[in-house]
Image 1 (cartoon, chains in turn green, yellow):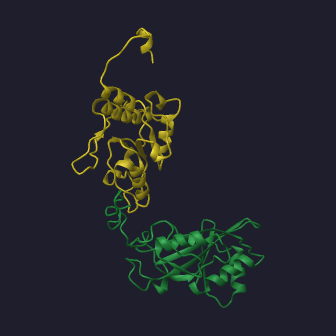
Image 2 (cartoon, rainbow over the protein chains, first blue to last red):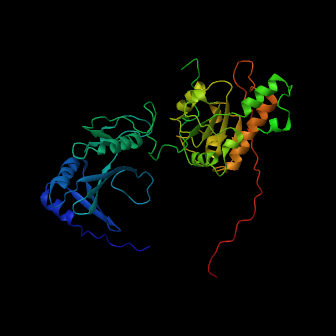
Image 3 (cartoon, rainbow over the protein chains, first blue to last red):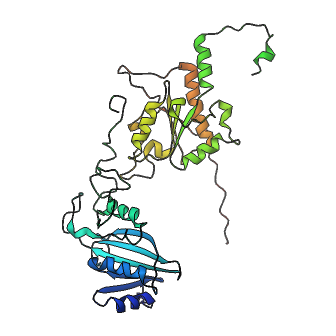
Length: 186
Length: 188
């Protein structure tokens, strides 16, 4: 397989780099999809700039996705990633922002990890509320200043974050040992 | 009905009360459709005019469990959905029967994951298992007819000494002959 050089011609790269000189950025591209990799501490500032700057004007947050790179064949800058899928409706453009996070504690359970915390963007795009809740539910990545950070897909007492790669796909007995409701107990 | 054409209008028929009640009960099964996945689409097709579940007296789909006596579990049941299914089963009036329609409701199917119950018979008593992914409408009708045959012969479903329902444990067998599929069209 030949490795082609990523095409970093997307104009947003230069605008962000020139306008926010204090921040450290990395950039990548794959089949026309450009991704800006930012440090977790810079995330909210960069996102706020991408929304408000008229040359960027990313007014729509299409999706927020979590990724676990445990066992990934290529070396990655961190184990977890959160990807923001931005769309500009006025310029008809799509752009990705990615944050890498490394856990500092064991990831088997639901233990709160201060290394897996980033800033919420719900104040910029209110639609991020449910997608950030999904990332929290599936990967245990917490969001500062989120108005209602509860689990959204699994139930409240679920003992793990199930999309982490160290969680077995058949679960740890949750589906077998679920409570049976009958007339005496309900 | 046709029976009044064969008999004089002032005739008297004698039979057992049990048989009349069983006949009335099996001819008016009201299903509660618990459709969570693609089996629900096939369940809708079964009720529509081409397959016409009304021929078996089971066309009145009741979306209130308190008005129905046949629970058709059609589709995969997630663990989070299981309490809802159990509550619906508890709310149905006696006597009641349960059909597990399709591979996912009976065994979990291809969804062997942490979130999907591997067979709803672990939590509620299932009387008839209808195989298929999804089953054809004929198969579902066969499952309903299996319950009708049981009602005709036995009446009210059996209960164990602890008062819990004993499942009938009927597995429907395919009624159609599997023929060779047509050859794919391709360039040679």
